[in-house]
Length: 391
Image 1 (tube, rainbow, N blue to C red):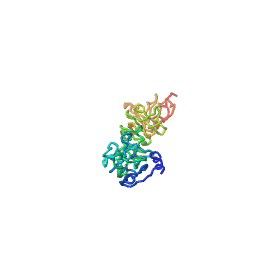
Image 2: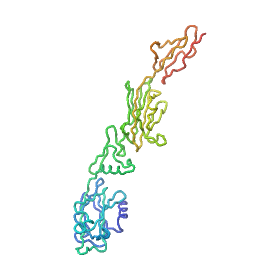
Image 3: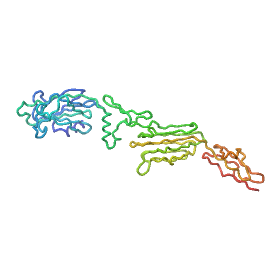
Image 4: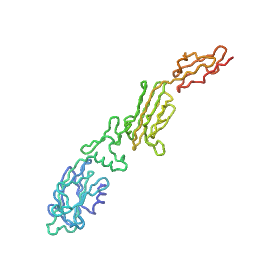
């Protein structure tokens, strides 16, 4: 009722006589039709159909007093209005008839007037005299209305092309499906529909990858390398057995939206392991320029966030589960390593995480430092290498 009152105040003169028309189709005509209409008319018809449909109106008879080319349709006229949201838009003002004043009159039957939404308003105004000089008095009009399905998908595409901020229009990200009385959005495989009904977000959520097979593996955002989805939260946690770590690197085509300040406040990728946040990344330069990084323990997590606007190409991560190893040092001067057995001809040798390296000194020398070093989870030894000193 508030919207209706507002429209009447904006569009029509005070004290207009209003008739409301509903349904799938119908007819209406000027007061007294097919006889001549009265002077000083101010009448309106508000035609409303179901939401999701449009109103279509055409005239089968039209004969109103013309203004004789002084000011087009300044005396008696019919004006049609597209009523949508809280505004109205004139679809045209008409008078005369098809026989004598064709330029001012609508074309009967073939000229169709369509609303944008589910409501159209038709207003008729007559002045103090409706006699047409040298002819019989004009008889008014007869019109037909019907509901017509709207193709919301086409309407949305047009709205996007005209919008200064296309993201605000609400066009389906992937597929728009029209049906009688409405439409719905759907997404490509690997995506799912956001609660807003039109945004396709990455269907990734929290993914845990345990004990990946030996060799290189890859993670990538949905849409890579074209564009990643908006309003998306993704998380991948890669973990292997204790005593291992995860080595990973980023493809150089890395591209995540970045604020003009250089801060990652819009979209970002956060890399976390047991030591805390390794880094929060955005922009178009791969972290560490694509160099290999390693987790400090046996797991690493990649957390991605995107906002509702810009879409960039995203990222691809290559990762590999590795066993934690420690380099076996050279034996101390005047001493030896008793365990594990080393073959110096084989070059550098390693022990696995938690393994023990044992040292002894030759006869006549004493060991300064620890006789046992343990391989730690970060690939270092538990203490400095011992030395052998003479008694």
